[in-house]
Image (cartoon, rainbow, N blue to C red; front, side, top):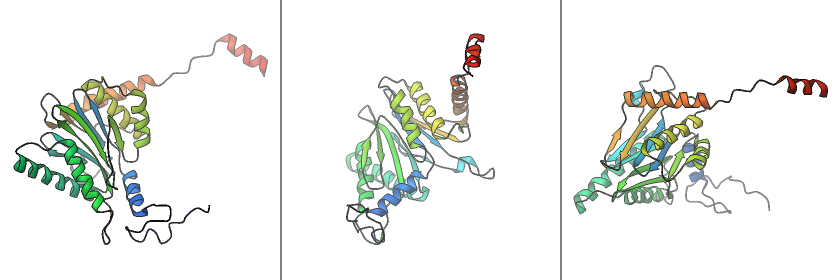
Length: 264
């Protein structure tokens, strides 16, 4: 069977290709893959959200780059992809959270909010004259004294994770999580794991100015951003830990050197 070209099938969002693909959604996913890396990790003691802000110019104020958002007292989110699209989704999320609180007199659940956002994303995949959101979100929080972590896709798909990453460094970060994640992680160990993932995703270019961290602790159930004073020692510890992991080649013994010379 000949491979199917996307010629003509990517001109409208609502047109399926013969093999059942919607190319505009795939293009939106590419926008997410080109974004900087965002990471979410769940532990028994809370949720950790870590992002790479990637300051591209010394003229930019790092504090003006916003990739972590507070949605409600107990829910936070991180984005990757088109920032303007993410901001629109976050505004919608905040509105849904407040409506739920007024209507039902209780905080919205993390899963319920994530599904509402995905329902909105899905609506933008089946109408002409619109385009999909070119942004993915990691949504984490505390619901019913339980830590929950979700990843949303431009298509409106929703998956719950123990640890996940979105953006350009997703594959490298996920490889680290697959190897090192454990269900019994403490809060500090989860932060260290998230930073390990970010370090690998950025090829070791992690600095205290390029990292933003937010946590939702199970004990308090409140969203909190870590200050630069709290982030600095964590990044310094990360860099020190990584430098110790670098293997130093052992010096060859005289016997090994003689064997090599004989072989030559």
